[in-house]
Length: 480
Image 1 (cartoon, rainbow, N blue to C red):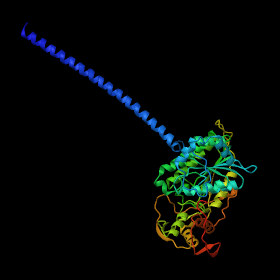
Image 2: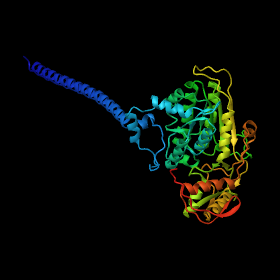
Image 3: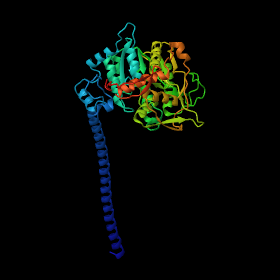
Image 4: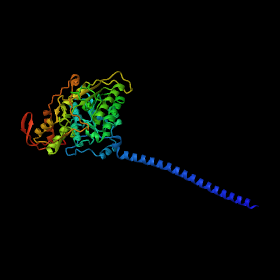
């Protein structure tokens, strides 16, 4: 055989060997890819299973955080703490089978919601452990209406004050459930358990400046929570209740026309809080138009009084004056004092009850059909007489018998407005709203409560009912 032929044959053999080796490598690589692919699928499935397992474990150990389940509130003994209940109490209650929806729960809900007078209302009050909510609940119960309260007891300000209000309501026979307005299942069960004629929706995230720190809480409560309540009332309540809810004078924003009228523009909010309340008014229009819900919005103007909110200026100033701490007062860029239309709580409560009494019926049904147009209203509830904040501080100084350490600065552009001034003509016409409490008289009532609640020993000259008197130490427990 010629040498060239032999060399070609040898090369062919080598090529065949290389090809065979390459085929083996390819098969191994393919097998490796399949193995990696299978491993990836297994890893993905394992991750999903692990995630589901974690969710299940979370739900078991923290049901109140996922489903907002809650227990019935009850007045504690005189020696019990006013601090919020621990999550373990929720778990033990749920574990005992006493979660909401049981027979005992429904009896308690119906008992609290049942009117005690002929023709009385049955009112679900959201934010019932809040400032305005607690006062309105007491007033409704006092005249014989049925009242069931709901509150999530968040920590925007000291929950101990909210618990104290809850205990006060419990002593008058009003149940306040520890729950959240975003819990649709809970709301559906409430409307199934009691035929509420009205809803007084006061639950909201309040505060102008805090919106810059926690904007999502305002959207969750003031927008999503409002939509959730409207959804359940429109589609699950039978019959549909009439709804009265808290808007805010903040919706007037950068409006400069005074006094503020319901006809004035409200499309220039100065804060996120104001924007969420304005959004609420637009949402109310949609649910009224589509589902026939009777909806009344109330624009509150700087409400103050006993059992108030510690984040409000009058309350925080009182605490700072007593403690000898400085207070900050705002002035506009041109040097004018900030002015507010301070409205005493008793006047606001009368306005809320008047709005409930004249709300008119909803016209929709669970089937989605409505019989015709339903009332859609909005009202200002103010005092109609703006007062410089410096005047409010001067009154507090006299009542507390101590001068304030004042620090005056230019008003920042963080949501505050230089003045508020309510026109209440429409509320006066439609349900007789007429504010009757002067700032001096209202702050006197607040200071009386403030001294008692915090058990302060304030001795000195104070202005009470136009006379100079000596204030004695008062010993009303904060837990009362």
